[in-house]
Length: 323
Image (cartoon, rainbow, N blue to C red; front, side):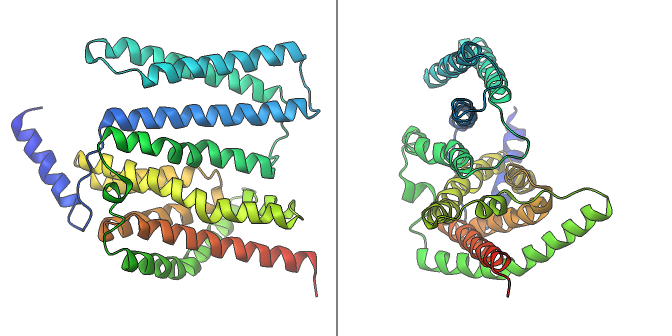
């Protein structure tokens, strides 16, 4: 890249930082490490659920075959993690990267077979599954965050602007969530109507299915904590705190906003909620950009989830006890 091209990229990045948010020093190598580590975390989470289902009674294949698939999955993921944490020598980068992709893909293949033979039912949703799914993505993000920040010589406060007008950031987060709530519900209703007219049967939200199957108060409290705290914290750190500034730093502010927002909506695996979550993600990104404090989107995301969770509990209670 020539000097003129560098100036163009820098100028475009400067335009992206027109709000309060300043350019982040996230190195591409560190972001890649984090992303692949999360992928491996998701694979191991899926494997955990497969093992739980298989030895819980749903056995679709001989125990020795299933055990071999589990061992092969763990071994492949372990090799990938070993390659991931080794210092990356630029002279040997291609060889190491190819090996990393190979063992990650190999681990994913073995996990897919193990999941297939574990007796999983289509659309099956459980509290344990939701917990493992959350821990394998948002949990892994928070677990790896200290190491990620240490590589950049930053602490959490400085990395995400947590000390920048934090009271105002919290207030704005609550207000944005309350204002967006009816808008999001309207957009979701419209999406449901459009899908119905296209003769596409909208899937029931995973959270709705889980709440219906959780009569115990303790389980609902655990789900509430996951919904209100762990999921928003992990997702905001990943999508708004790390991925958005990384893409924007290379001079692609619109791609940074819409690309990370699209990915955020896609990981929730629901057609009806895709567009509302896409719009919410864009709003959260703009909120972070304008305040420079990640607390603002975290609080907004958490408040939005809490309002939805309470609403689902009320609806479920009325359905269970009709007047």
